[in-house]
Image 1: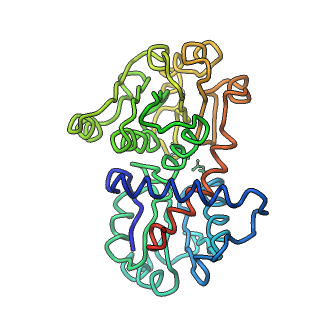
Image 2: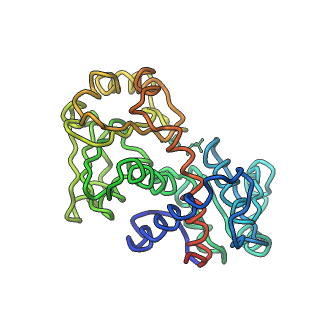
Length: 309
Ligand code: CP
Ligand code: NVA
């Protein structure tokens, strides 16, 4: 079995295998209804237990459909209904029960330490469904979307990220190093990636640049990524931070500095960091991006359960 916690800890050959499997599975399902099961039902009899300590729409739905399409089942736990959240049970015992009842555990949490603790005690695969430090299933799926639309390996493309240095960006940075693609990050210098991430960037031969200018960041790129300036549970002065990002709005003008066929991606949910006429434009591929989570997460589940062909 394998965990899926952070892209930087997963061999790139495995990540590529996941993407190849997802592409093949998506192709085979062209005429299928959402709940129709893939040939061979590779997860028949298997249960994915999910727990969300923070809000989620897409991750919740996409893991549900992913498991169903593979012939398995999911159960979503509400943390407020567990003894664990009230201090009435340890992670160790909770993990033992999860391991005896389920076949994989997906956790969205506000604590990277909690993920580490669960990893220590689970004997089933652990999937990170978003933590403060990363959002690996999102970014692997986004690489799938980029390659699907551009019909080219991501290593031959240049990518821009406009926005905060958050969990999604951390995973994009890890992906840039793993898949070797050019990444330009546009943000106010105060919000550049933290020391640990900067050290990780420096320790690798990489193609990552950070600029304090949105125009420079997007100049000539193939893809522009954005995310909310204020992430869930971001404990900052919101008005002040939003103000500091004023010059980093994605609008038509900014898009015009990128390549003509540049696409816009956003993991969602969105706020005001992108203008409606970009978000709803032809260049925006956000709905396709969200749906692809199903396909890629199916292959992630198979990878974790050693069932990837
Ligand atoms: N992009 C994403 O993870 O969405 P949710 O927070 O709705 O799961
Ligand atoms: N950076 C965002 C991503 C949401 C999917 C957050 O953590 O809230």
